[in-house]
Amino acid sequence: MTSVRCIKHFEMGQMGELKKLVEEGKIKYIGLSEPSVDTIRRAHAVHPISALEMEYSLWSREIEDDIIPVCRELGIGIVAYSPLGRGFFGGKAALESFKFHPRFTGDNLEKNRLVYARIENLAKKHGCSPPQLALAWLLHQGEDIIPIPGKFGKPNIGSLAVKLTQDDSKEIQDAVPVDGVGGDSEYDVFADYCYKVANTPEK
Image (cartoon, rainbow, N blue to C red; front, top):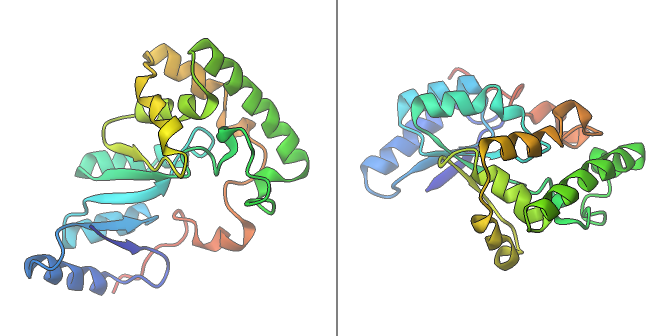
């Protein structure tokens, strides 16, 4: 699948070129990365989009309000990156890799450690590790959502064995309320490129 990073410089004319490549048999599928809802609809009208790459995890659930409903309406899959909250639910908090990220600094980090403690307790209840529980929750959000498990594939594959009921899923996400997470989900420098505001040109 050919994936196009949909930030402000992506234009619909590029979708036309990708469509030609599909027709010529040079590529088979087209995917977009972090497009706005409007971009998804306009791009899909040029050629069907197979999948989107979007951040989605227990503590980054913004796409539930707009992207997921549109994707399900149009039959588009979602590849969820950072399904462990940029490593946070892996237990090490990824302090070195993300030390400048808003959720890993100062008071935000202290607040989010309480969030992790709740997930850790729920993981014990389900007989799994915190990352396995976080991935299991994501896997239970629908067959059209595929998480990228990262470099710890072998231990994380255990998430497939974690069976959750609807009540379990709700209990897990309630342990990480959207308004209860400290800090923004993106670096400040990338705020202008968030999918909600980085719409593509009409032409």
